[in-house]
Length: 246
View 1 (cartoon, rainbow, N blue to C red):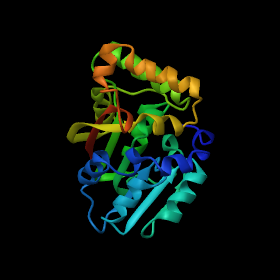
View 2: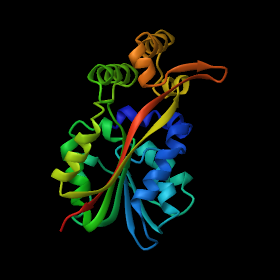
View 3: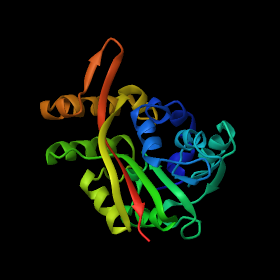
């Protein structure tokens, strides 16, 4: 994950409905099962919506991100005290077993080395602590999965890959986490707002919409549609909680 890729996107991410609210935020909170005394770490926090939501559950929340501008926004907009730490999820700047809860929402597909990132999140969780991963995932159909990867890569050069749900669960197990709970949901995207977050050109915007709609199988899988309210689609999402083994 590149710092430069995100430092100039603060305003766009701060305005993003899919990051600010929606079912994935509430599910992440629910899976975290945080208590008021828990020390919580939210990695790749971006503009801090998840950290802010968790701060309503605990008085001790650390928001971590590689991009300093994202962290400045997170700290400035926090409803309560949130500590901000600049660090890469691949090499987290925290001691072993430091946190009761670790969360990562809508960021895992940006990690170049998912195994290392997951291992780091598990490392800083205490024994019996919880790690919650929420991220967009590839559909089971390999053709649709390939289309998703192409679309995301065209729109956002910082995108690495959408793993299959079972791959994320396997990485959690390999990192020393017992998968306690998982569920599938989806996140609705306003197509034009989604494009604006990464500043794509009008020509690329049109190419991306065609990639969603020219193939019937792809269009149906992501429910790509145009209504009076604009153009929308859905990405599939996995939310999973793992408990750190001793």
